[in-house]
Length: 187
Image (cartoon, rainbow, N blue to C red):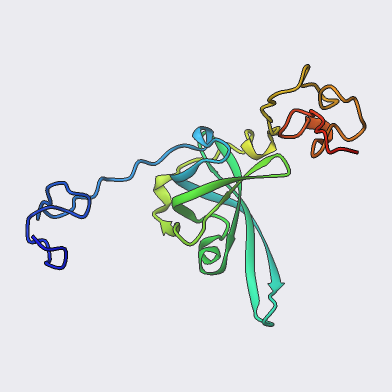
């Protein structure tokens, strides 16, 4: 065949067989609050809203965006949430909400649930979450960022061999990406 002729076989764009079967979606699985871990994305959960605070932020184009911070949870615990724009409309004390395709951000070492443009928040039936365990707030746990060190003789906090204050060329206290080794720049 010529390079200019269209391919008229039954293969998909990657060369595999293409089925004309309809796409079947799987049912989402919903997790409990205690199963939420830092930097997790794509989670689904049912939560009952316990408290809400609202702030308004003026944008650069002089429009006002509503941001609502809330504490919500289920029978395993509670967590902090931040929602913006149309997703924030469902946050009212006593409402049961479903977060689909959400993400977990770590802000100043603490977990906060958020929903970006790919996620969805909906108001649900109140009997999905019967009780809320306010005693266990997973957002109160402090998470530390662990930096993997590489190179250097000791790879310690001083940044390796040079023992300088800055820990190497781009080091700082963690030794930098080169383990604090000094480069010879002909100085």
